[in-house]
Image (cartoon, rainbow, N blue to C red; front, side):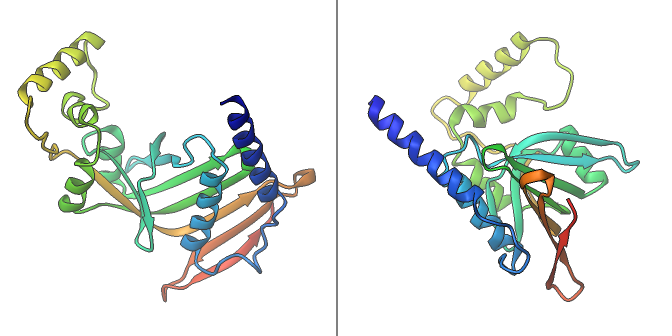
Length: 221
């Protein structure tokens, strides 16, 4: 088992070294930023990074007061980046007031970062139902038990409500709460950053044009 672990670790380190040697060049990146993101995400997965799907979600109130937290990417395609949460939480309230948001992925072992900006909308109830059914049962119950971002009296209060819901839904399917579901961020700007020597980092930005095409720029570090 130890030799197997060492072999896997060496293979992961080799993958990371190979990635670090690849230049980020505006002339050779994929013309579609979603495809470029998928390339990088796949390389992060193959390098066996811890939770490569973790991303910072930054939102703001209608008055421009910002907040940020980590959420998990659950899907990405040409329509955008999908994550899930409580619609009544702080992020949910801020997105209802101001649907413009930003995402940041940082893969430290690969010295890479991706910044994404765009408009956020709730996905359909059917899509949220479909994903909710794939969640572990305890997570389904927690979605009911936790009034996310609200003040609670104690940990014991949350645990009591959780156990009450366990009993209520004993031997039953746990329904998705109407206030819990998915969001999709449709990007209008995506920037890829890769560390380089002497802090002359590579930055390549994709800007969505009015005709639906993407314009690619190299930015100064």
